[in-house]
Length: 436
Ligand code: AMO
Image 1 (tube, rainbow, N blue to C red):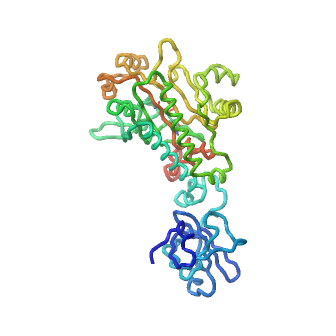
Image 2 (tube, rainbow, N blue to C red):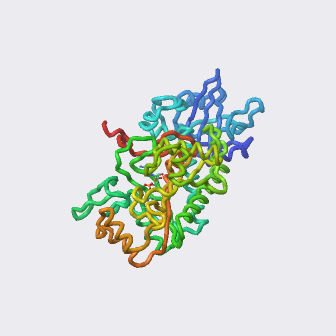
């Protein structure tokens, strides 16, 4: 019999159907066995009675994570016996069970709260928990919201390379890989050069890119491999235009997440993010004045948290922009207006205590860019490919990049970005712990 997906069951009351999925829980109640069976659309309760004697024999063998196909009659549950979840009003009265695959005894109870290391050690299993499924469903919504907002704002998607000849953000942080002809290449730390080049053909371009960072960070916000939501746009007057595009994009993502996942915010016990018509914007010095800290080239993590608390309290916003960082503290391609020196046209977007995005207006003049490279001790010869974009005319432009894992983590109040990454790579781990 053709398989019915759990989501379609409520319309099948009284009919005999086949479902398939994972045994989430088995509960033995006297002569009855209850099975919660999960498929891609949700969990439904099945009940095995002694009347189905063959099914009962098989049901006694079942443990969590066995995969099964079950034939049964769909019944409505009495009002006072309704279960939780969207399919709590129905139940499958089991006629037969086929085991599709067996699962060994689990190393822990899947419904228990796991510490992060245990979660990471057993990802092929722990990604199946309700919490993980929520996190990565939310991540998918963020990706979808990013792409649809970009398209709505007239941007064209392109794919950026992961293998690059030169590092865009400054050599120290890049992983080196051996390449053909006995040369070395790098894993891209950012699609920065490529998105700027794509302003040439498309004026407005965006990409969802893998970025690789070799810094030996061991924090709750750093990964060795992350996903970067990048865009770049031409014909701007200042960094304010990319900030406006980003604001609209973030607002679209928040709206989609709020509309689609109200139940998820409840399960994670925090409200959907608050984003007004305009995200509050402070210069770095204004932020430092509010915090009563001395001028430094950036906010530290504690400063990021405090200024977000300020924005929430004083401006009722979960987001805040910081602008006017010293040019020296920003990447070499960041534009500095002579009247605004020594401050740059860069910006950071903070969300619930964490920087999730960085962007700027870029240098677009060929000679000025070469001058800046010399100032920073960079050899323009090594960047000749990128420089062609400027040699052959690029308008004033700018853009930004959002870390997908950081945005996911802040959206659901997850403490460590590693939990907001299906397969995190960090100092000590590529799937398995490196020390082992
Ligand atoms: P930046 O280096 O600030 O800027 O990175 C942009 C955003 O990417 C995310 N991110 C990371 N997330 C997890 N682990 C990491 N190691 C990591 N590194 C970065 C953060 C960060 O805000 N080319 C510029 C962007 C631009 O100007 O358009 C850039 O890469 O969320």
